Image 1 (cartoon, each protein chain N blue to C red):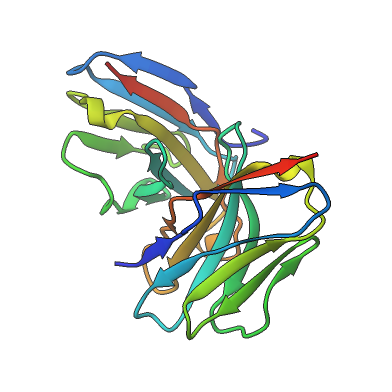
Image 2 (cartoon, rainbow over the protein chains, first blue to last red):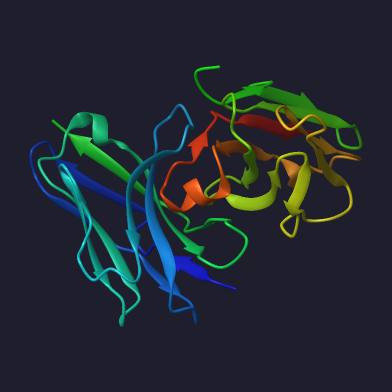
Length: 115
Length: 117
């Protein structure tokens, strides 16, 4: 089974600053997908960014970017110019390509953006 | 509908009771997933449907848990003889097709919070 580890239970950042959330995973698969999801207090999970393992180029979506290190099995999320609305739980998730289509989530990192 | 709708939003029940949680996916979405999120944890996969059939139910923890999707749209998660350990938020998600899930096109509802006293 794949395991996803998020080693930072809580993080805090000031508005307009940059913060990086870490994620590592364990798998024997060569091809897979990685995701970061945001969960605000409303509980609705929202996709932030995704990465396909066979693509070496790191994904970016506006203020969000990832540092994908396949050999190290690391997938960190960088949030630039943090905004108060970024305050939420952030979950890293793994999905195999060849079966299940189920997401394996980490335990999450609670991010607080302060004024 | 505009999004994935889950009812009830909150459910409090007593140990040993039967509970049904409902998920109304986005119209036209064939793939539907159930996840369970316990306090302080990430969501844990339970089951997914492709149309009316359960394509993968490997995440259901035991035979007290059962889910149906008889007409390929609304799904109901059924929990028999509830236990305190079943207390969690139950999340439903849908996608137009399972392939779209890989693209990140998976839309979640706001969940049903189940509390078993």
